[in-house]
Amino acid sequence: MGKVIDLQKKPQTPPDELITSSPWQFRQSPWEVPHFFQIPKSHTVDPESCPAATDSIEPHFLLKGGVTPTIQALYTYRESEEKMREIYYLTGLMDCMINQISPILRTDILRSMYKKIIQIKENFRVNWYGPLDQVLLPLNPRFYDNTQYRSSLNLAGTMKELYQAIRKGTDEMFDILSVEYIFYCPKMGGLKWRPMR
Image 1 (cartoon, rainbow, N blue to C red):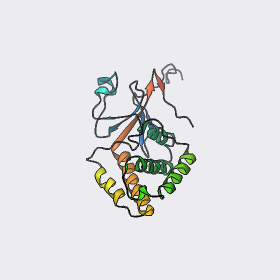
Image 2: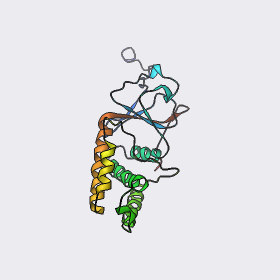
Image 3: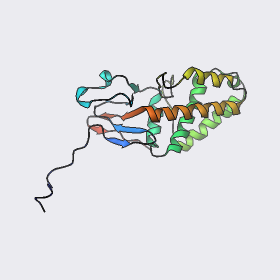
């Protein structure tokens, strides 16, 4: 039996180990990097050609700053598409309060959006901190027209229309991120990043 199966050999782990393939593809980074990063699936990454860091990986988005809590929350719930979509909708609500100029948001109705955000944040234990210039994940303009999305938010005449526009937009973004991108997890000093819950 010992001649048939080599018990001394350990199976090799691929350098960009697959964590999940659906709803989003998360992989363990083959490089030591302190942040998540996203790369288009159409772009092949060769770990041997880039052993140092993400500076020479093109094209890619390094997910730091305001998008760090976003991608961490999405990774935490990576096995539930429903929860991930709800977190991305929450991200759209946050983005609307931070980056959107809307006639509706200049009124007392803003309070209802604030309460909605607090409730969803508590449900998923998600919190953004630090400078929040951008919370939605970056998308290449050839995949998604961000200008049209912003315009739909600005044209919303009621809170119901605004919520619908955010839901529609974040669902479209979610689908594009699922189809077009691979997400690599941080790895520092050989240690893999693990989410805290």
